[in-house]
Amino acid sequence: MNYAYAAPIQTSAVSVNTSALDAIFQASPVVQMTLLLLIGLSVICWATGYSKYKQFKELAEANEAFLNRFWKATSLDALYEDIEHFKRSSIARVFKSGYMEMQKLAGSTKQDENSPVQLSGIDNLERSIRKTIDLEIAAMESRLTLLATTGSTGPFIGLFGTVWGIMGSFHKIGAMGSASLAVVAPGISEALIATAIGLAAAIPAVVLYNHFISKIRREEMALNNFGHDFLNIAKRNFFKEK
Image 1 (cartoon, one colour):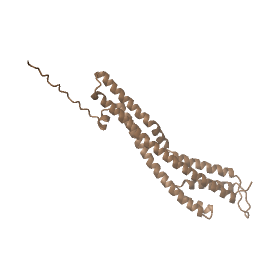
Image 2: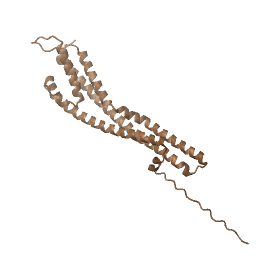
Image 3: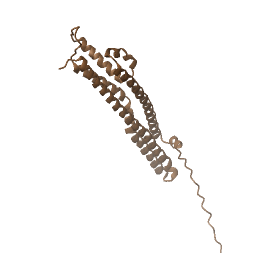
């Protein structure tokens, strides 16, 4: 009795290249634009973080130098003459604003030449100092909105790319009538890359934002403390008691 042996079925392995770069290059234009947007936001956030780091470093050094000079000064007039040496100091700008307001009040107050200066209008001085402090805080907060926006929207932008990539995979399945790895892998790969880049852009942005907000709060506290000290000195030496 002869037995017929069936020839073994030859299965061809399907090679699917799903490396990150290949997935990006083979992605749909919408996903590629999404990735470019996220990468651009990430680069801008890192550049903003670096510039803010330099800004706060220079600000801390300038404020420390000015405070050392302030507490060693024998008179406010002598300190004001050296104010141009502390252009980078936010505290120096608060002092300059308060000193100039005191000069205006002195010019509008009649004084006896033989009597010490006694000013009135302490509320005006307080408003001037408060306004300058608010302007300094606003300058420190500039460009932080971009970090906050990237941190809050980055994952959702990445999710948009993910959804679009998965939609492309389903369209291919429907067109080819097959759900093989070769059909679905490219779309799934580009979808996952969009999610990863969205998180990679958002997480550092949130960390940088929180870090700089913390620094701003400390600088605001330092400005307020100096403002109170300056007002106390002015009240004791130059203003009439109510």
